[in-house]
Length: 101
Image (cartoon, rainbow, N blue to C red; front, side, top):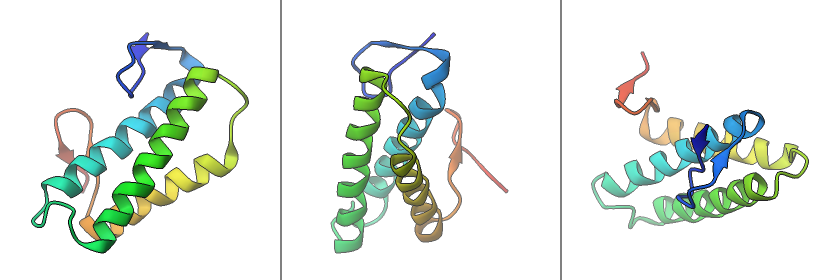
């Protein structure tokens, strides 16, 4: 089993792995925005970071509670990843940081 992306150490069941993966991907995009020139200080970057952090908190809560799937949260997080891709290029794949082509 994998651990929760939030760092709490909880094991994530098979059913919740896609949600956990989405949270990890969003955290990686936030780290990428902060590592970019300007360090996330520009207003659009700050707004993205705030939205991403809120989404990650909601994703972690849904994993911890293991309640029913939230379609609205799924749509919001998918849009966050799309916004990052539009603004900063192609997202990274996996832990090795291989970019998609």
